[in-house]
Image (cartoon, rainbow, N blue to C red; front, side, top):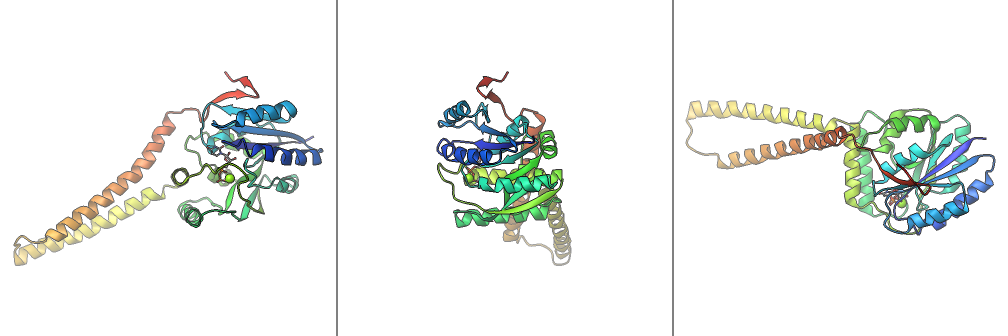
Length: 312
Ligand code: UDP
Ligand code: MG
């Protein structure tokens, strides 16, 4: 019997889980030809999520949970899940029911047909502010144009991955994770399905603009060196212009002499060059900061308990 794991990262989801679990249970009972495993990862929730999980495990042995020692973020929580799932394939799904579990049987069908990565593309994105939608689309465009790897628009973590993909992802232990890029990076046979994203049923989205921007920066820096190249090119062009201007000033001073003048030019040049230098330094800094984090080689997450037992 093939085993299907469902991975659910949870951060403050005590209100969503009692709605999600019955849906999943219904699904599992309806497809008894497979062995099922639910792998909840409690990502340092501050509410009663862990109690709900304990309760669920008591009533259903298919429920497993990994309890992280603090909030490590969704990317790290998913990695913890990758390490703990035991299925022949795994479906990653959000706890807030924005991803319809009813799509899972279809994913499994395509998996049985030989696809390794069956991902779900959002046809609609649910309720979301105009600005957030715009920024998110802009980010995808930026990343796509700067990276060699295909970055799929409106495709998130909702997908089915074969054991081959899980093992490949487990090998990628970088600490600044951008998992959406990794799915493309590892390759394998992919299949696209579409779904309509609903609204979050309970609780609140934990992705404020600050976290989204930080994820976007991780995405760009871990999959593209383009910002560095741009700062090189801009630096080169600016110094070319400066060189030409230098010749012009020099020749002008030789021929017509140089009464002190040009204060505005000076100020503009200083500010302009200063700005470009700071910008380039900032870009370099973004990369160096990530190199620094990476070299510390810390674990990506720390587990407090697995299924109620301490992990030593
Ligand atoms: N999540 C997590 N750790 C975090 C933030 C979010 O495990 O630090 C989980 C959350 O519980 C949910 C999924 O990631 O299952 C998606 O989060 P959310 O619904 O807040 O994001 P959105 O749907 O607004 O992008
Ligand atoms: Mg959500």
